[in-house]
Amino acid sequence: MWSDFKKFILRGNTIDVAVAFVIGAAFNGVVQSLVKDLITPLVSAIGGNPNFSAYFFTLNHSRFNYGDFLNSLISFLLIATAIFFLVIQPINKLVAYANKLKTPTDPTDKKCPECLSTIPLAAKRCAFCAVKLPVKTKA
Image 1 (cartoon, rainbow, N blue to C red):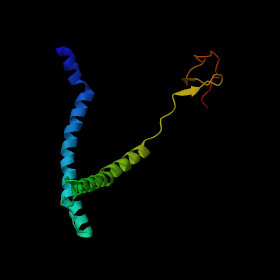
Image 2: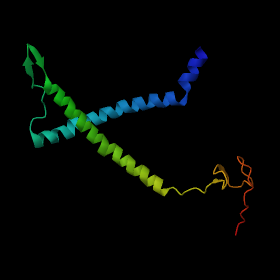
Image 3: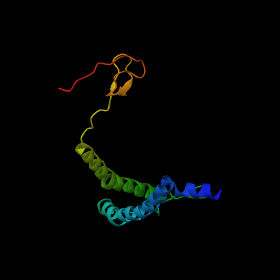
Image 4: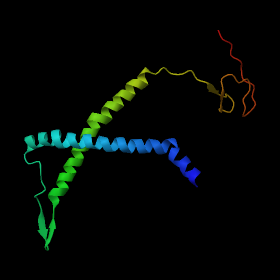
């Protein structure tokens, strides 16, 4: 049982998930600070009150703090916006640029003219239908 546990812990994806969790927790602090210290004051400078926690209503002696919900909703939307524009968009552009720089590789296989199965380029006969393939000579 101990060796199975050791194999499980030392598998690559388990360690990757653990590292991603730690990095995500650290990144969460950065994003929270960005929204709380930079974006929320900017929004409150434009729109007025940045804190809605005092807003509530009472119904049958029950207090509904809809202001806290509004704070959480606005915070979520600001965080999602910050992540999208400051992380997702730049990474997508970087990946698109990297993919554009890649040269296409030469094909290593072809379709059989008889049965349309995929076979290696150097094949002289189809492995599926045994038809003899024309030999192409290099010009």
